[in-house]
Image (tube, rainbow, N blue to C red; front, top):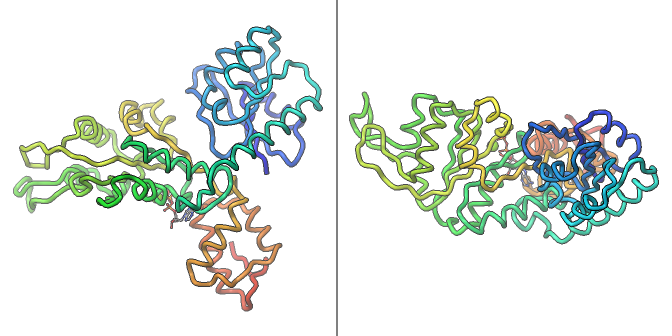
Amino acid sequence: MIRIAIISAEPSSVSGFAMLIPDPYQCVPIALRDDGPEITPPSDIDVAIIDAGNRCVERTLAMTASVVTAHPTILCSTNQHDEQIVRAVHGGVFDYLVKPFTQERLRRAVEAAATVAAASAAQLPPASSSGFVGESRAARQVGYFIQQCTVDDSPVLLTGETGTGKELVARLVHGASSRATRPFVACNCAAVPETLFETELFGSERGAFTDAVTREGLFERAAGGTLFLDEIGDMSPANQVKLLRAIEDREITRVGGRLSRSVDCRIVCSTNRDLKNMTADDRFRKDLFFRIGVLIHTIAPLRNRASDIPLLVHHCLTESGDSERRFTPSAMQRLMTYPWPGNFRELRNVVHRSRLTARGRTITARDLQF
Ligand SMILES: Nc1ncnc2c1ncn2[C@@H]1O[C@H](COP(=O)(O)OP(=O)(O)OP(=O)(O)O)[C@@H](O)[C@H]1O
Ligand SMILES: [Mg+2]
């Protein structure tokens, strides 16, 4: 299924495009707000349509610049000034439609853009070569992202729904980096009690508090390697300040200690929350967000990369030594149309349960238990 982002400030425009764009295309609305942040390109769309309406084309393009770079983009506006058109095309816009346009003109533009999108996705190697199973455009972009992360030690921020593979990608980033032979240390920020955060991350010196022993914190344990801060969106504001200081100074002091120690670990964070949104109402510190969010990738949910499901199912069967088993076409179709709120983790459970239920070599739609 080709997914087309409709980027517009007006809800009515989205429904208008949805009516004009026939199957097999799927429209994905993205709201454009003047006071909103610049739009980041979702990895699970193929083509973008930006409806500038009566707005200034240049301002609209500035707000959507990274979308235009990442996807073949069709710009629509009521503006007919040649100069703006020339600039838009110069800025990388794939096609430009002046309103009013016919449905046929739109269809041709979308078809051409979809062809270009498919060709550009095919240039990326299948993500599986990176360890992230999948061949969809979104999965290939994960593979490409992992490669980009090897260029230097910049902090990485991974976002995405539960079970999409954030921790897996964090481990793959570490494994592909020059730090691969050094430790990968994971910390689930949501599980560390508020009061123990500092000792957990920075360590403690004997006598710092009752029962305190001399202990390395996670920063020190990750020396030379990668510190993975999972569920970073759940960190309290007080701890965010402490973390920011450690990252900025590249130095920590153990609780109860006086010596400051320099730390050398790459920071990889993950969250299923929308951190950018959280910075808008101060639930997450902006300075920390900019510090940790240098290389950002949002892993697409499974329902938006259904073409990966047969490969992922095969991966689950192989994992459990059952690679001879096959799902019937109708069972596979059900797997490919189910919305997977728990993403890969849920898919793996369903595959395992069905394996146990099914008697023969083939697993039918009736054997599936969601
Ligand atoms: N594309 C994939 N290829 C292979 N394994 C995958 C893929 N996606 C997810 N997995 C596996 O699914 C499981 C869940 O992934 P992971 O723990 O990385 O998800 P997560 O995004 O961190 O989830 P949560 O937000 O719930 O912590 C792991 O065992 C992981 O190895
Ligand atoms: Mg996780």
